[in-house]
Image (cartoon, rainbow, N blue to C red; front, side, top):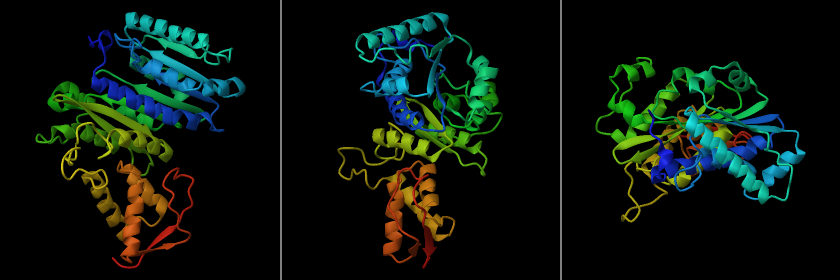
Length: 378
């Protein structure tokens, strides 16, 4: 039976995970909210738990509701006058926890309405509760119709215990669904520890994942790269991860989006919590730590690695415009300021020139003006 983390106070590692959930959704929600191409927003928390820990600290379901409301209830006001609809779907397999969750969500709304001057709560009839097996939901006709609908925006949170639920088939379905961003949790060090077991081999569809015994803190990045390998080379898709260390265990989050803006938003959150590499709480690139003589967040091993890779791609002619360069940095999990650093260096060294009107735009790259890069000296 899965352990019940809600019976005691959340650990600092769980709180970090929840903070990332919160801030990722906070970045995601208004983008889909104000899109004229989205008629309805679906927010799924498919391993919702009981809603809070023993001290009343919000778990993911209440965090999602709190963020969807907005810090000044501005989104409630929006939905009152908008034709756009919203639905929250909370699933918890254990019936006892599911009942507790429903009670806490209802309490959340009652408390909210007591302190609200708006009236006619737009979220009142937008919440749904299930206590079903994840695979039953995932294979259902209703869920699949929602996933396939390009008029719907979907945010899917899969905070599973362990690793078995999000396999190759689940991942491929999620990554092929339009206007669907997802985050799932995975215990990567467990896969590493039992990689020769039948359960893990079946999970990986008998594919061998090359773990390095001397670099256990990289196991979550390796698992993220495994999922990335399932994406066809011809498909533009964005995937990033965040490793969370808890003593000798390494687990973490994997985020997927078919839009560069989704990746920009998630990376913004990751780099906030890890200013060295944007991907862990455990210094996976072995940079100087805060308090050490040579500590800096400007010149880190990951940033230097991406700079060198980008420079090689530009000087080989593989990257010939600014948008391609920025997307390359996103795909490497880097801050887009890295692109500007490399372009400035190459221009100053007279190795490239810009064809067209140069700009220094590095956010919302799906909308920026394109210019070309011409190699003048290799």
